[in-house]
Amino acid sequence: MAQVNVEVNGRPYAVGCEDGQEAHLMEIAKLFDHQVRQVSQDMGQLGDTRLFLMGALLLADELYDAKNRLGAMQAEITRLQAERSRVETRAVNALESAAARIEKLAV
Image (cartoon, rainbow, N blue to C red; front, side, top):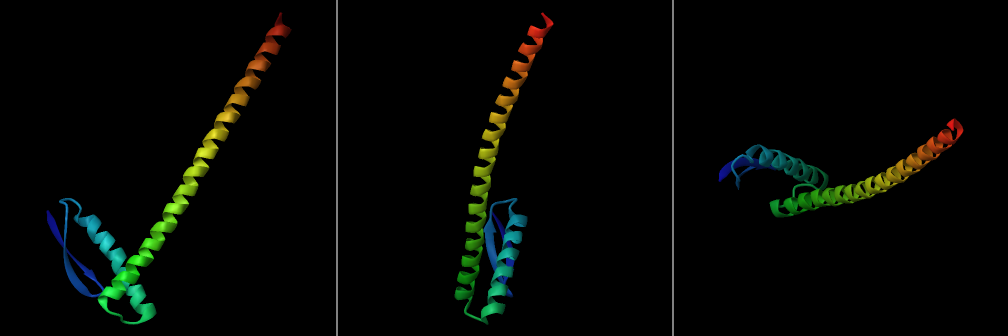
């Protein structure tokens, strides 16, 4: 298990992670640090626990919104795939009908 030193709101923290996940952990720690610093800037200096809670809640809210948007997009993709299938079926039927009429004319 790897250990990474991250900084949140100006304080260092040693955090363990799986080997190979160090860069990812540092990136998400930067995201959290940014959120905590924004809360601190907006609300003034609170205790670390309260700052961390507010930062985590804001990130959870963003995640919730992103999951909702993803769900809506997945539903739209499903709807568009079904519509594409219906359009393809109509196109095939129209082509088959046209081919049958052309064959009748050719005879």
